[in-house]
Length: 161
Image 1 (cartoon, rainbow, N blue to C red):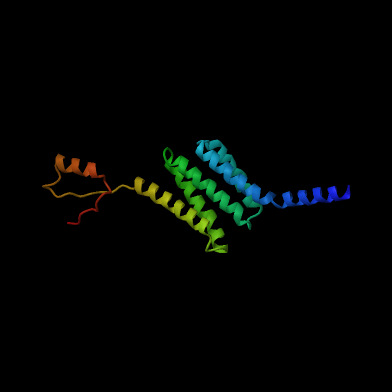
Image 2: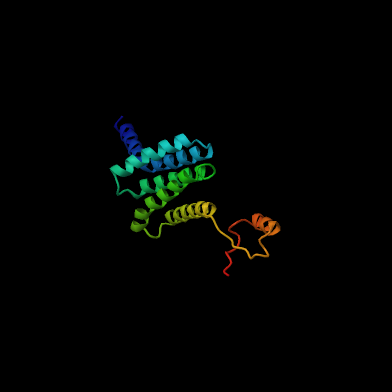
């Protein structure tokens, strides 16, 4: 009987030691599930919970990484509709990754997520930027305006006269 108890005790200890790793995997799965189902409310709840945990334990880089990942996914969801919300989410992602990268500058996952957040910010800011193109007097007719409209306002630099 004592051998069975010892085996059961060892099995319980091995499962207990794997619980923190499983919790991190669960967070990733919850973030991805909320993103893939486009459930913005679930993602916002995850971000709120992770923000509370990060504020309680600011030294844990894994929590910051998960929060940054959730913010990145929130930015992707919001990029189509609300540019300001997406901008705030991408900027928050970058801010959460700064302490993580200061502790481990060679973390590939963190560097990749940071570059994705910067790319999201760049796309948002590029699309919201207004460019002026000054045309010459001979090229400022309706045909010239139509050509500029097809290529887009930011497709070529402004001319200097």
